[in-house]
Length: 296
Image (cartoon, rainbow, N blue to C red; front, side, top):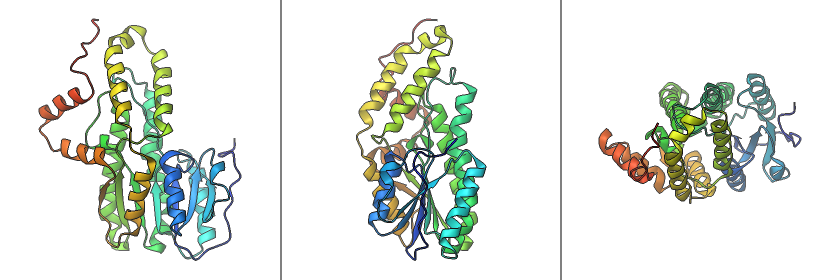
């Protein structure tokens, strides 16, 4: 099966500083790709599917890459290495991700595996495959995280756990790779208005249809409250994240963590509060105080 619906097109070698962006086909990934390309960087836009809107953009090459397929990742690394020759990469942006949410009691093992396969194992696989190019270019590894990495969100346990794992990987790699001048940067987007949430909501609804109806009914009020509260929070645009990634790539001494918007900054402050206080605030913010559970 084809990894992407548009033909991959890696151009002749260029002397421009170059960046690989995973998950470039939509949302934040597209915004990052377009922003970096406009800035004059050469972007290898890695897509698993889609990406037609990127074809023909100046300074953009489309590369087929499925982060959950080791062979695909290695093939993409070989393709980019051949194009770059000895010039290396300025950055690798690990943006590809999925969101799995739902009550901890009801999340299927297969969905948990999918969550970690993309958000954690896929990001590590990409980093390992492209590190020789980062080492050659004394570049930086930019991992896209989430506020839920530091503040686990009720009914979003899988995505929270996966991003916490990614942050731990980033923290370890930052020290390990410093001797080669490779900076490891974490960008925290906050609540962004992108199609990924629509896909996540649809997947969650499908998963609930396969779960025990009696158990699903127990959580119906809380799920409705959380869905409404989270939808209201998604007001920032992908461009906010793209601009933050650009700063992280261009900074002579990049920070370890960049908080892209007010939501990300609020989560960072919330994470420092005592656990009981944090739990009470989350309960209030998500509208759960007014939502009594359905009796079992």
